[in-house]
Length: 268
Image 1 (tube, rainbow, N blue to C red):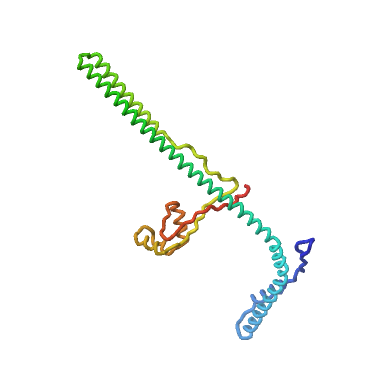
Image 2 (cartoon, rainbow, N blue to C red):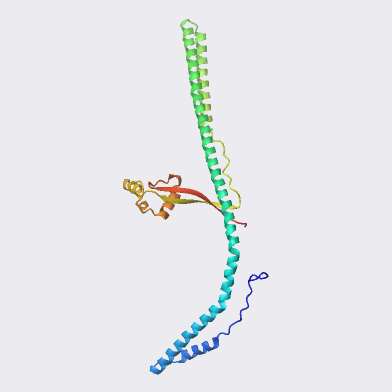
């Protein structure tokens, strides 16, 4: 290798004994091994061919050696750049993974908050409906009491009017309560912005298994809460089990560690 060219090779094309080998093949096909003399000839030809193959292999290796050495030099030249690229990709991949995990956590926290706001609003509407119905019932009770008092004094017209107003108050309260209940049933959590996923990358969730205490696992198997396969602490099986169960994964003596892997998809 020099400053002007990466690799300079001048390999002389070797002359191979192809015709001679074909002649030996033709001779062998027409030759009969039928006695000691012909067997000796066939044996000698076989040994000669083995030596010829050995010599050709040595020639092959000699011709190819400069190419292999040049290939190693090329690999050595490019290796630092490949290693730096991989290092740079890991830097950004780790930061992207952390960002994506943070976005997932943010989305989950906002969803929980939105559901709590929904629950509080539904609770308020339920209390308001009960309060409105109770108030209308109390108002109707007061009006009916007044209607009875008017009837007791002989004022039938006023008594009927108070009875009518009591029925209206009771009906209005029930209608208001029903409207509040319908509004409660339609209450939905606020929309939450989905976790941001930068374009041009793909993500997958990786699971790392830590086998902490096989004794705890054995007790869980004996109780029938965990399949017997877990007793071997078969990491491949445990990883598949963790992926299948997700957040519900629970094997005593084993811990699943979840992390996000980032890979570039490239242009299409």
